[in-house]
Image 1 (cartoon, rainbow, N blue to C red):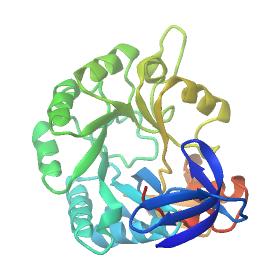
Image 2: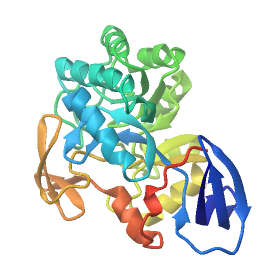
Image 3: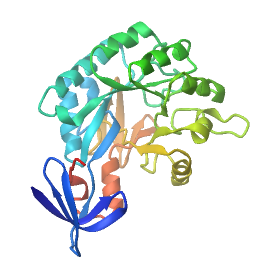
Image 4: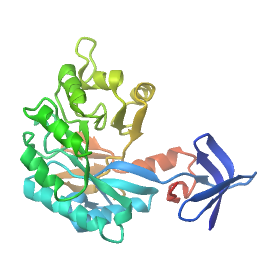
Length: 312
């Protein structure tokens, strides 16, 4: 049994006391003790890489990504691909499968396929290898690793037919990298899609006469990712969606540049440049590489806050 003392985050808020745990949390003992903040381990459902390595490299890249994030408070993650040629996607998926069978496998919850069925007009930082929705290609990719989430653009021909096929297999279909109109996105929800990928980013925004994908999410969304780094989304927009979507959850969307000094790093077929707290593709800022470092500075600045990895 291990005992930690400090301010413990519980469903009722922070409690000062001692946390008793082994494989699981056994008890929380309230006491007027001093100590660091103690938080449950993070589950990050959108992770491309970190520490200079990325998922698209295959097994070694996936395992390096896991090791890096496990050092900073994340105890479970989805290895997330970028849109790429099929051979590259196969390497990444086979690598994820192999990593799940290795020493770091317990922390790997599966794969998030971000594409390849996304809009060529809303790639964002994704490399330019989108494919039209195709059941045969999807079935092949699903056979290579346990895919838990697929991001797709619902306006593409064949998407509305593919969504129920994926949903029947227990895969969460999320709308993202899309130019869909409100009506097209609504049809996707009705077909079985259940969420939105990095809400606000790489999708049609809210207009009072054309609500777009963002408007649909605010009106009817039950689940959505958002990147709360202060770069992707304005804080007021985050507060708005917190009021609207009960299942809103934070993701890092971390890439290979996370935790690294300024310089050039891979993002699939792209080379991106890390400058201060942002990563840039040309002159377009695309991702925040170090969400957990940002959070560490803003939540009490207590050393060790994000190094407590607990399973509740």
